[in-house]
Image (tube, rainbow, N blue to C red; front, side, top):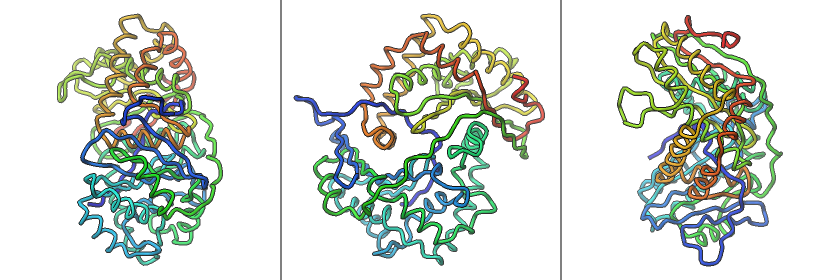
Length: 447
């Protein structure tokens, strides 16, 4: 019933206000803002299952040097006592409504969400708001919660993709806010005090930094709850700290025979829809994996095909990497292979990336990349969780949102020149992160 996890890739967003035109359908995105700064966003496709979230601009980028790890501790404290109710009461009520509760975190956002059958949505909303906005952070509960933090760290190392992207942000943004990890460091686990958590919550879990977001729920129902019942403290947090892209590399050796390597350059943030669409097409041109699930192919992307030629048919995995935050992003490739074989693959993929920047792509390649990018957007929109997270990210980054179909229209307008310019920007200063058996992994200056 209760799940906690982190999310490292922000969803694509766009900067066009979602004003409902005359004659628009019930599935239009609707966004409202209350006088206290609280934002309400929804889209209703008429499904029998509602997905609801209370979202705050309270991701790891808002941690100061003395607060590192606080968002991980806060995320894992969801489900414990609040200022008004015991955690047992809240979780029992959530379960009796048939709802699934999840707490997630990105570098930009802290999200608590539920999915529940539609007629139980009002009940789930009241429980959701209490658990997200009114945490008590009792010190004895935090002590009991330490084990879950260690489990997260262990799981992260067993699923290295997320860990490598975490390291990549450190390489790209160094000690800037976006370089902060999504996870508490080993030396921080259990050492973030309840006073620190309360101070952080008081500064970030406020109405001016919050949004109540719903998929498959009436907008008026969300508005009524937000205006009359939501237990979110009125206030305004500090503006998001900027994080300059610097570039660099971070390598962490580990046991095992595999090497996980990510190479990326500066991408774009959520405020520029055309630039985001261009980044989506660039990622598709690099290669987003095989079209057939569980096949031994690597897809049609240029970086993927270059790596395939360099592999001598040795098994490996490759996919484009694309991350968009509120103000900037990353775009590049992620490769996993046997440590002794990975060097040639990384060099081939980066060479193909640089080739796009130097020579561009032809008409056939741009059209294929646009079709792949559009398909990925529409497939993600089929999942209510992805749709909700996308809507939340757009709304809190830009104050507006675009539908997946509108974003696909922007993708269709992307030109080969746009893609070449985006690639030029990215490869002008690359970042590299590696984890695992790295003896044969090239250093950044060798690429």
